[in-house]
Amino acid sequence: MDQMPVQPACAIDRIQSDTDIWLEKELNMSKTRKAAIIGIGHVGAHVASALATQGFVDDILLLDQDEDKVISEVQDLNDAMLWMPHTVRIHGGDFEDLKDVDVIINCVGNISTLQVKNDRTLELRFNLEAVDSYASQIVQSGFDGVIINISNPCDVITRHLAMKTGLPKGRVFGTGTGLDSSRLISAISKKTGLNLKSIDACMMGEHGNLQFAPASVFSFRGAPLESVVPDLELDWKQLEKEAIDGGWVTFSRKHCTEYGIAATAARMTQAVLEDEQIVLPASAPLEGEYGVRGLFAGVPCVIGANGAEQVIELPLTEDELDRMQMCCTGIAKNIEKAAEIEAGLA
Ligand SMILES: NC(=O)c1ccc[n+]([C@@H]2O[C@H](COP(=O)([O-])OP(=O)(O)OC[C@H]3O[C@@H](n4cnc5c(N)ncnc54)[C@H](O)[C@@H]3O)[C@@H](O)[C@H]2O)c1
Image 1: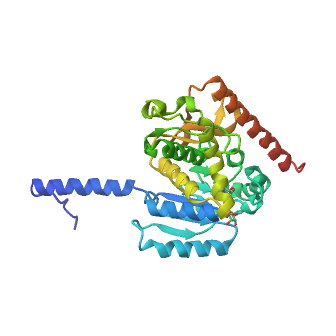
Image 2: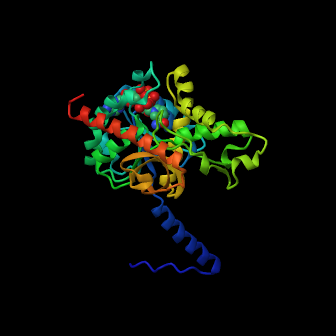
Image 3: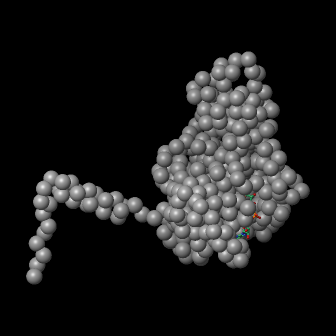
């Protein structure tokens, strides 16, 4: 016998029925938010922990050439889950599982190459070859999301990943000077006593020793920093140096950096998953902005569902533009070195 459609008997029932329909729609629409991390070393493991704790991801896939490490990290992170504020599925898998992942965070590396010198380019060969070993597997999986690259030298490896995966412009971007900006803002905060979150400042250019602080555009919510703390002479050269050297302060003593970069990458992942359209410093493709073309460099850009969606051009002084050019010349030299490595000439 055919079922009669159930009619709400009164207004309350009608409201209930409307709510159910709305809820059902919402549930159908709210898809599982998936992230994958490639390279579960110091950085990758901390990114996984930051994502799991913050609750904007439902599923985290861990990939590493060292399968034992993946088993250990999956176990350890799952051991923490009961005490975490959200329930997240954390598991190992294979590159083919990247098909329906929204964001990949690329964290491969070999930081043992950095032990003697503060020079991120020492990882160039290793990380180029690492990316070459799995980029085609990312493509073959059918992955159609956003890749955030951390691996160093960040600007060059980000470009390499973008070229190897062929994803649309902006869908591959790097953390770039994001972490360095955090170091700069922290130095300004310590000097001025102002809260970190009220300081509009960033580092730009190379995620490396050439990066610079474009102090002419910095403010305390629109007011020049000097006008908010008038008795304080800010030594921008010193603050810039603290931002550049911060990574080495951490690395030279504990032989890795992990919390700062994990928090940076987690924030960027959230900006993509929630289509935040927020301006953050990141390594983005330049096509004429700041007079530069054909490479990735650290610039403020709009981050949303499609990655680094727009590069913001700050009104830099001539000196600052020169510093930007110097950074890009340095990045271009490393791109040339990368091409020689790829061609077997270096
Ligand atoms: N951009 C930044 O601001 C920033 C900050 C910190 C670290 N880093 C960089 O992040 C990277 C990772 O740092 P770390 O401290 O975690 O290094 P690590 O040496 O502790 O870990 C690297 C991991 O990558 C894995 N790996 C290497 N080659 C692989 C491959 N082909 N396929 C899959 N997995 C592979 C290794 O097994 C290891 O687990 C390095 O390049 C480091 O310089 C960047």
